[in-house]
Image (cartoon, rainbow, N blue to C red; front, side, top):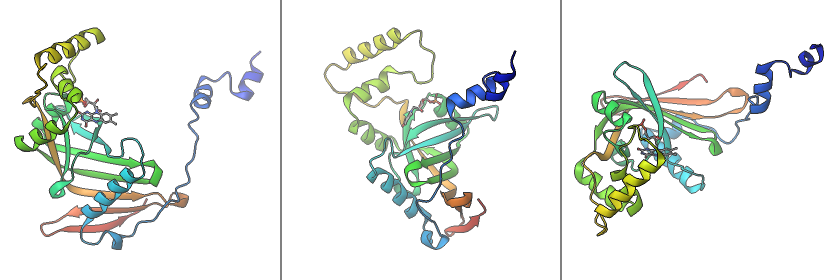
Length: 230
Ligand SMILES: Cc1cc2nc3c(=O)[nH]c(=O)nc-3n(C[C@H](O)[C@H](O)[C@H](O)COP(=O)(O)O)c2cc1C
């Protein structure tokens, strides 16, 4: 007899899953507003200010953004990376050039970036092209990292298969012994990419799902700004 199961949903696997995961939460977005006039002629200043406000808010990984790359078959691949600089109107992040993202970007330098700051109801979407940052700039950043992170960059063949956790730990110990004098130079295959946006979109959540969206398109002389429907 399954009548009761159907009424309370326990007999329906889909209902059971959605209950366990609580997929029906609803956020009311009411923490701010965004007008084209606030962005003026320089959307980059707003991007830097939103990043700074996230840092000041003390949230975990305030500079994390979702980086999208395209593989050779045109499939998109996404993962989080950390923004390390915004100099010269570019987003700079660091990684292993031989990793999946590194290989994607070296073969096809088009990328997407998405920031999400739930504490502020804000999102920024970006698309543009990437270049490798100068070796001297990567050297300077690498030198600023804690020694364990520098050793990790040598120990990890990022995105390649490893036989076991033990094998990875053994690779780390080997690298530690190799650089026991504490001098750990930057591996040539590790460094920065700089993403130069051609399009930026600022999103500020608003009540009734009538969010503020401002799209900024790079032109020869600056930026064109338009408001988008939510
Ligand atoms: C919050 C967060 C920040 C991360 N920052 C970086 C980063 O700055 N650079 C990086 O190479 N990987 C970073 N990672 C790991 C990447 O998401 C990813 O697992 C790794 O780079 C391998 O990606 P790939 O195989 O697509 O190249 C971060 C992960 C998280 C969750």
